[in-house]
Length: 322
Image (cartoon, one colour):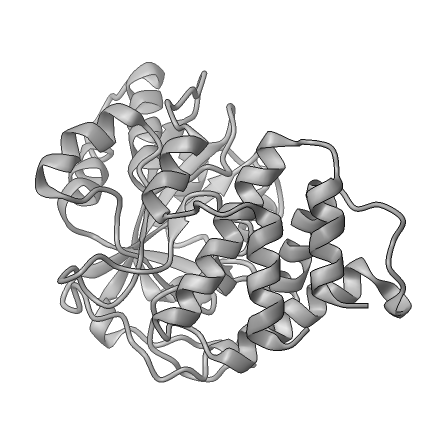
């Protein structure tokens, strides 16, 4: 059966505002990435074929189809993308090549300690262990891209604040919230601890050491790398560099930044890196009572997601002949 037939089922399914908003954003991102040559036609087609096969195993059309089912299938299809294929792209991040790179790691229930120390550990313990050269292994998951941000502007200011001695838990909670806001970290939850790792080398000199991918430079993320990211725009505004940026989660942050026409941060992705690539680790704080004024309606308007998810699926069906 065709992708267009699936779109018809989606259109008839019960309303689900949250799933519809997420699906619209991700399908709009995919189409925009194609239009702006941020990903190849073949890569995008393979991901849509994978989504279609998940939704229609054996080729048969399901009796009904809910938007959240399509959303899950879309994310599964993006997760199935081979990192070694992705990282063969020739593009490099073009903004801030001379800046060092920062990546945020989320310590949920002390789980990061299991990877690096063999036991659960708090964020502060992990920072102290890093400074004592007792953390070993990789930063980042083996099956996902490692997201990097240039250590400049707001990110540099927040990172510098974490070096102040005797910060109270309440002050650290404010710091962690601010970093999550500006980096668009919509996947972190109350109680999660945020740690910032900063590389020795600037982004322009940084090479990956993934066994599957080989040495590669950081590249700008696309809709495929964004996977289930709710607040990532994979295309730039005119004159703002070659790649997309994250979307500030708090409305007040966006309002302040709109005077300069931009908010959020440029991003790069690379395969996970060995701990030896990082010069510093700082514990930012634990997220407490996170409540960003982050409305789907504002985000969808900004990225131009005016069509319904069913209409977007039909556009993809026409694009790929599916």
